[in-house]
Image (cartoon, rainbow, N blue to C red; front, side):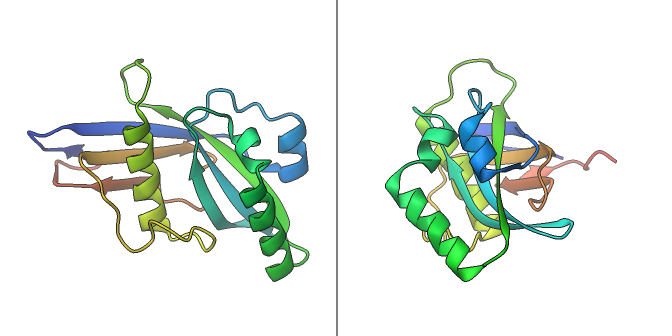
Length: 160
């Protein structure tokens, strides 16, 4: 499926790295190329999505060490005792190798939050202000995210 628009549109791929236990991720992050991250809870073989976030001028491991995230993680641990907390970082590709704008990363984050409704994202769950059309493919270790999300008119058929 492809986006059909005369306005600005983006076809993007996010490649998600394997989920890593939070403490290990903070010690050896490997997230230097990441624009997105998700906080997950391991429940058997399944992953529960707690939070989706973006970074623009910092790394996800820096973001996770900030007071608001430390408080969020403590709240997750309080509400879900015994659940292992994992982090996965997502690397954005749009086909153009230019530096991505804060607006583009923010709009993709908004779309991901709106579609997936993570429990600990307080904003962007009801509706979002997206200015362009977006077609986002999630690759790699993206579960529990959908493999494709989009906003805007689309035409064509999805590849099998």
